[in-house]
Length: 477
Ligand code: NAD
Image (tube, rainbow, N blue to C red):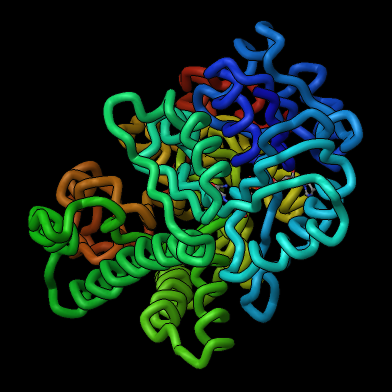
């Protein structure tokens, strides 16, 4: 079957390559000419584990092609997947301009019976409007289906290849049958396709994301209470998650959720509720708690330096909103970095995958480093923002030698406070009691004698993977 995927972003590229891998001929259409030109040269514009290999295999088999020309992409396609962006806007409603534009292109260029499946996350009723809009502009028979996507960045390929379910919103037997055929290879052990009406399918996606975001905000509020009451949220979290009715997932305290989906989808659900005179009070509270969580973390850093960050050098480990991706959209690291920059701190950042995106975002305001130890040289503190695997067991000795002060603010609770105290760090986690370490004659927060430049340089030269320039350099993507 010939499939056209409209929008070659995180969802479009993964779905396109995923469906091509089951033998279909897939053409990915994007209005971004540079992106398409790069893809044609073999450059995958996003970082997602396993994606390059999946794309390469299907390019070689000539089942996957790219174009920026709708007249080349759409004629002959029996299924069109809409995977364009639906970014948030200031009033909470998503900006649907990419969806309407995609709809116009589809209406103009389809040339036969077509199932149009909307994978983009869109408010309830968008499918109805798109249906009417396309019907007004084409004589081809078509069925407009809601087929929201549930993949997670960082594990998008494996999520797509092994979906927990496929939600299909349609009342057309033909569309249902076509999508069954499409998804069957991914559901060989048991059928996990849930067919429902289009509006319910659209709402399912928002309800899922808002619910998951609420769990994160809830445990973050519990973490705050732990700090006040002298409890340890890591223990509380385990106690909660062990209840099978609750489970462990999305119950990790930290600096709050971010990314291209949760924040905008929570706000979109709130906006839908407001427009329908049905307040989404829990989603509103989750959104506010998320904002508070970031601000609390920023205040904690500022407070540690007596409210004066001017001239303080702070290193960030992690910019992407989660590990396994280069996506920095609404990443908590950006909010934190911007707030610290506003207070005249010097920000140096390292991220294993998002260096290029971070460089474009910050321009010259923050320096982007290519070595996780070199970025620590002579800093007043390290701020851990993303739980990349390489941050879990770092060389603490090397870190302590490089840093001007061995202070860590950990927004992801990666380390054990007792072990950190033994290692001589002043360690600030979220919702966990701070241990008084061997370091601090004067208690945690005592100023530590700075290392000499030479000592720091020596220890950095020993860093595996160091680039000889202290790890800092121009980032090329
Ligand atoms: P993205 O911004 O990475 O990609 C969107 C792509 O669509 C861009 O390359 C853009 O140039 C292209 N585009 C815009 N208008 C177009 C048009 N008229 N014709 C052709 N191409 C066009 O977006 P994304 O992260 O892949 O998200 C896509 C949708 O899927 C959103 O609604 C999002 O909420 C939803 N979603 C995303 C994820 C995720 O993890 N990223 C997961 C589930 C659902």
